[in-house]
Image (cartoon, rainbow, N blue to C red; front, top):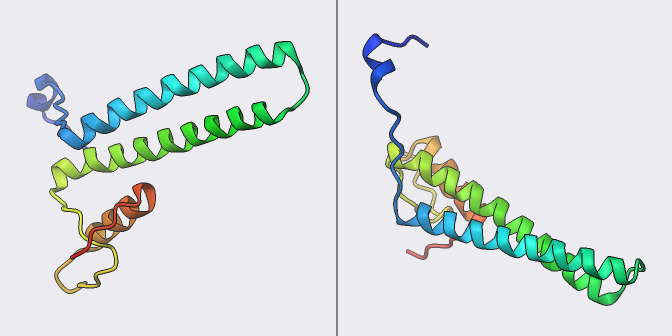
Length: 121
C-alpha cells in the first residue's frame, strides 16, 4: 500500500451515525453494569466463599453483560465499516443474489446473527 505525501497531512475522519452512537452508549452502560456485578460478586465472596444461588444469579447477569457488550461492539464495527460502503440492511432470508454482491449478503447475515435484527418485507 503506497501513500502520497498529501495523505500524510490529512487527519483521519470517522463518521458516526445515530446507530453507532446508540451502540456506544449501550456498550458503556453494560460495562458499567458489569463493573457493578464484579464489585457485588467480590463483596459476596468475602462474606461466604461458597457458591450460592445468589452468586449464580449475579454470574448469569455478568455473562449476559459480556455477551451484549461483544454483540454491540460487533454491530458497531460493522456499522462503522458500512458508513463508507453504503450497504443497507435487508432481510437475510431474501435471496436476490443477482444484483447483490457477497459483501452485502455477509453484512445482512452478520447483523442478523449478532443483533437479531429481523426485517420483514
